Length: 66
Image (cartoon, rainbow, N blue to C red; front, side, top):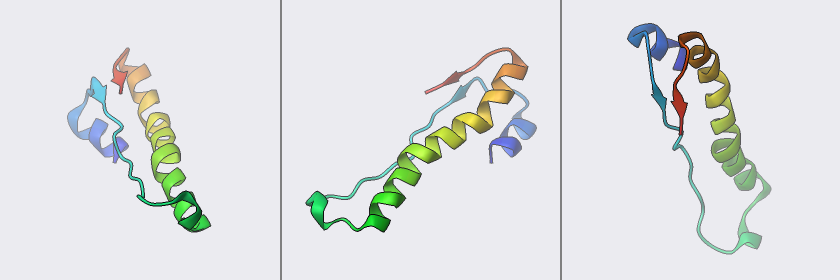
């Protein structure tokens, strides 16, 4: 999606990473799979977005990631 967005728009000055979710309830009630899915979305997903967008921002000489 990042590749397609930069290709289509040419220049993007702002990338907002706001994907995430949580589960409500007692921590001891979460399964290992639920914990792994939360970490994959909230942490790993943000890192992957940054890694995908950063080369484009560097090439264009700037931009922001929030």
